[in-house]
Each structure stands twice: as C-alpha cells, then as structure tokens.
Amino acid sequence: MRDKTTIGLAMLGNGFIARTHNNAFKTIPYMFWPNDFEIDMVSVCDLTDEGARQAKERYGYRKAYSDFKTMLADPEVTLFDNCGPDPMHYEPVMEAIKHGKHVICEKPLAMSAAQSKKMLDAAQAAGVKHATMFNYRFFPAVTLAKTLIEKGALGQINHFRGSYTQPYGAGLDIPYEDIWYNNTGRTDGVGQGIGCHVIDLSRFLMGEVKAVAGRSKTYVDTRIDKQGKKRCMDCEEGMLAVADFSTGATGIYEALETAAGRRNYFVWEILGSDGSMEWNLENPNFLRVYLKNTTVQEVTGFTEISVTQQGANHPYSDVWWPSGHNIGWEHGHINAIAHFLSCIASGEQVGPSGATFFDGYRAEVVLEAIKESSVSDKRIFI
Image (tube, rainbow, N blue to C red; front, side, top):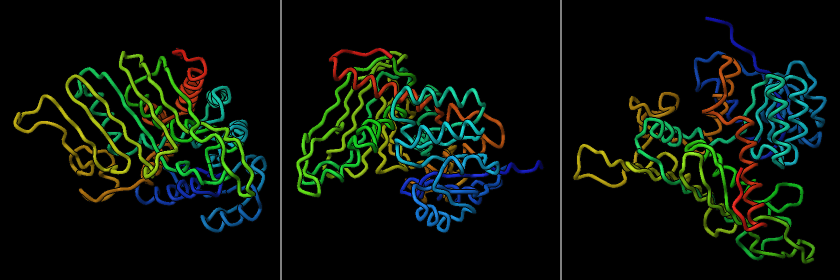
C-alpha cells in the first residue's frame, strides 16, 4: 500500500457555504474509506480577525488569517478552497494559482466570463487541479441520469427543461439591503446566483450549448431601505432563455428569485425518443424515469426510482447508508469534494464527471449571452 497524499487545506470564508465545505472535509475521511489521502486543516481566512478566530476554533484549523495573500504564501498549503462571496473569487484564486495550489472555487466562478477565462488559463498553465463547485452533478440521481443517457436508454434526446426558483425577492416589503442577489457588489443577479446551476447541469447531461435567446428581468424596480429611503433595484430577478445544444436538442432555462413558496425548487426534465427523465431537488433521492422499451407493456408511464439501492449500481450507494436510507442536500458537496481530493491523490482528471474551471467559464459565457440577447432581442451564438 502506497503512502497517503497529505493535502494541506486553506479555506477562505466563514459563512453558510464555508460551513457546508467544512462539513465535507470532516466527513470524507471516515465515509470515503479507505482512501489514499489525508486532510491537514492548515488555515482559514475571514475578512476580520475575529471571524477567522471563530472559524479556526469551530472547524479545527491550526492557523487563522484575515489576509488571504499571507495565508496562501504558506508552503504547508497545497489546496485552496474559496468559499468567499462572489466578488472575492477572482483575486484569491489567482493568488493561489500563483503559489501552485490546487483550487476549489464556489460558483459562480467569477463575476464575468473574462475573469473566468483568466482563471482557467492560469490554472491550466500552472498544472494545478481545479474545480468549480457545481455540486448538483454529484447527487446520486443526477449521476445515474448521466449514466442512463450515456447508455442510450432515452434514444435520441430532443429537449431539456430546467427551472430553479426561490422566494427571496417575492415580498414587496423586503428591505433593499436584504435582497441578496442585488448587484451591490455581492453578486450579479439570479443567473449567477442559481441560474448557473441550471446551465451547468444542462451541459453535463446534454452537451455543449451553441446558442441562446433570453430575457433578463427585474420585477420590482424600487425598494425601501432600512432607513426608509427609496432605492432603485439594480439586479436580475428573472432569467429566462431558449437554448440550442450542439447535438441538435433544444432547451429552456428558468431562474427566479420572486417565486413565493418555492424554497429551493430546482427541477429538470429531459425528453427523448425512447424515454424521458425528471428530477426535483426537493425530493432528491428519487429519479423519475420513463422507458418506452419495457418488458411489461401493461406497466407504462413514469416510474419513481429510489436511487439508494445497494447492489443495483446506484451511485454512492456503497458509501452511504443501507438501501432506502435517504441522503440530503449536503451530500452533493461531500461527494464532489471527495472526488476532487481523490483526483489530487491519484493524478486523475477532475472532469468530465467533476466540474472544472472550464465548466465555470462556459456557464459564465452562457449567462452573459442571455443578458446580451435580452438587450439586443436577438439570438446569440456562443
């Protein structure tokens, strides 16, 4: 048995996503066992000394920083995980690559396609492993869907329909400051916030996007801030598009932050000549499948498959719990990060099963084309 690869982890961030990633790093060593790597929780960085100290104590890091450049210069660090806010993706990642660190970066990869391309080019030139955290690829039902498509179970695939909706801007009385997707330096609207997940899964399951015709929409033009002042909203609250794939298939994208009652509703459907599939994030352990060529013709229509069956080639069923014992939202991150760590240790490629900086870049290209189409009212080839 060869020696394990020690992976010295440095993380930027101390919020919800950082908590999700830290949960993964804590869980992976004993669930994905045996493995050929070990994780050294070297350092964590936050914008303030107090935030960094809290993260160090909470997650068990050895060092704490409020300056990412100092942290990334540490030779003990071999992997940088960027869980910072969207505008803090580009510069820290480029700094990490400069020091030869492998990099995980939360989505969206950057604030623009141009930034994303520079990150991709730098990572490739440095020869470091890189991943964009499109975690939904690693839900067992989605992984199984990819396998069925590759086996040709659906025949000729004709259409993709994907929708991601949340309620965080639905109320007209929500203060200006509480609209997280508002373009105030935190993000660049609903497309980057959640629409990028729809785009990535469409590319993962369907192939490359070659053209889009879209609409970018703000539904509430002004809101009252917490001081009682009327403020103009500078954000994309709705992203809608028709897509053409290189295979000849078509697609529909939808992302909304004004969907009252939809807490985290991500659904996609794929329609083919010999079968169809659909999946819903709010019921993530089930893949609904229809196959025309069934051996029992009296039983037709969609079948709801619990993707938890051990011994049935269901993805990750040998890692997690006995058959029928469901997993949750956090397991997508755990599975994705475990794959990346394994690739560091083995030298294998992160893609195509894992999302790389190339996938993060292509998502940004599609998002910008949708906005361009909304302004020009024209179909955009990409």
